Length: 362
Image (cartoon, rainbow, N blue to C red; front, side):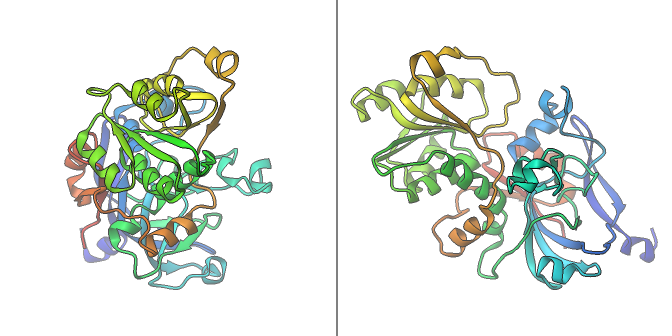
């Protein structure tokens, strides 16, 4: 490859099909009017990326599959403004060299949800890293940011690792807010993966009466205690129902946040939550989930709430990180170059890691 060719190409991970992700040289994105090209500093591997890689049905099958390959994956990215198209500086309020992040969804701006301010439920629903109709994702050296993207600047004082968790932290904040946590609530967070540990930090800032975290990995439960959990439960060793009942005069928890991504987490929540409680579902499941649906209505009259993406929460996430109220320390455990993709996805799919970052080599 000639020097001239090199300046027009870049290294990227390209998703072709389940378990068929390749490190390739591809054309570097070209900036157009009201667009940015950013140089990627880091891109996290999300649990949804792992499930997509493994071939989970919701990503590849069904009436409305998420993935339209070939596509460069990655929605947990941030980087530096490299090029600005005509009018982009004024459009986004940024300049060359600024450290920026774009929200994971690229709203169409035309559907009923976008027009009403509920852009995170956009009917078109283009998300970076799953479809390239608007733009590819962040597992590459460079990335194009289209005009309808929502861009935020990242202060210089925030570390690389903290900046890399802004996207999942925004999701965690939205999820916790959906729980409408009150001062006298007993809150249970099921799952102490990256999102669950961020939700623990955010829920702790809400100062509930008791904050309980459930997971099967003791090391993650230890981190949860460091982040503010009052009680941790490992269902392999502990009786979760007995413990939660002992904290609530046998009524059950007021708020249950499900972020395990496995069906058992849903059924567990239906047992642990009290009548008239608030059940918040965040997870992306790799398999269908079944339960006794009558619990929601006939037995407990639950308030079941979904949580999707991180709308209006990126500035909050950036502020919490800037003030040191939330941290990536303990959560970001590994980083790999793009060329080390095969090892990176293997580690991300294991219990040896919590959050894995891809860092383009410089």
